[in-house]
Amino acid sequence: MLRYLVLFLMAGFASAIHAAPGEPDHPFDGFVGRWNCSGHFASGKAIASHMEYAADLGGSVLLKHHADRPPASYRAVESWSQVPHAGRYAMVVLDSFGGARRFTSEGWQGPVLTWQGDAQVQPAQRFVYTRLDDRRYRVDWEVARDGKRFIMGDTLTCVRQD
Image 1 (cartoon, rainbow, N blue to C red):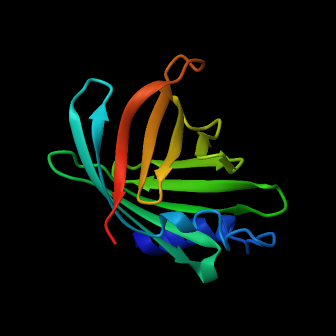
Image 2 (tube, rainbow, N blue to C red; image 1 turned 60 degrees about the vertical axis):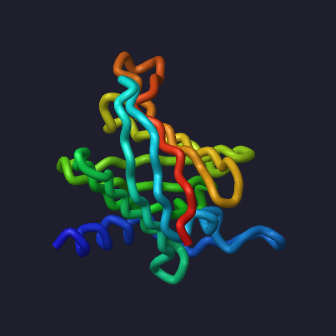
């Protein structure tokens, strides 16, 4: 059932991505594969996760499976795709806590990719992905409980496993 829901939501955002000459086929190709991540919450408490990314729908969508390692229980399925004719990208996050959140991004700004929550995502949230090198990236989940100032919720540094 969840698989069909994910496919339904992704279909609403999916479109073919047309790369300019000399650019990768998809701006998120570097994520495809398996990653082990470790980091901490804002409180300092340790966290570890496993993430897997795969291209789907003819390469127009990137699917991400996120699974925190015990004792944490967060799980999520994400779809990343281009918004047709808008020059930006969309992400849908379905999680094990019943969340269904939408985010948008203007794309890579140097080594940084920021996903900003839509107005319906409350409190305000964003995910900031930073490429550290070809085998590592960092993702910071940030929250603005006051609606203005973002602070760290958690941070993970991920290392490619394949």
